Length: 338
Image: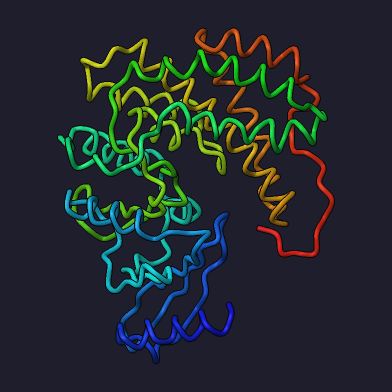
């Protein structure tokens, strides 16, 4: 942090009444944001340091306030300096779903709670409240898909522009199929590392994190983000039960269209993640994410079993041999791993 930014941070914390607080940085993630736990006496708060222009805290503020207004447990906003990218937010502690599972807590009840939160959210009549939320349109979905040829395929198989053009041609036909399901608020990174276990009643017992990239998009997206997790193995039977649990709450939702949307969006997400994890290693010097890529390939191959993806699957089988489907080899850099 440069001197000017450090001075701006000190002034922000002083104004908020936390200038003398003890600071404990949290481990970094895949973004430019950093989090620092502040403690003063028996109180604690979380500092989000999101430096412009790489980060913009205004979408986070808007979605946090929307979720709080709807009755969900997003962190309360204690102080803000959007111009410098500083937020002081409520501290939910450290007990993510991931840590609860490591403690031996049963998986099914926590996943059921997370699915029930999506059901509750998707029953909300949000209407004009989503007017300023960016759309998860084909252009954005396509840009994300482009991370796979741009970062993974060019390194693993030396594929270039022709591969990317064929790839995007297949996806242009697929993306329209996900519009057969309703649109809602998509939190976009809805998985166990971003869900907290809180001592609160009912749906508020689930704390929500990392929703600054929320969009308006298909109802299936957050569900597959939860049960087709890039970072942990979710038992397939449990994943199927959670998808069935969600669909049972919306019996008017066409099951064939919903299942197709789940598979297509899961495949889109997994291709994107393979590209992102490769980029984190190759560009940002964070090779720790490469260890997840074999799991993401397995998830993708399961997605491709759906008939809606048959054409893309045949093309991928021809262009990307099974022996190549793994993490690319990337030269080590002199930076800390993820």
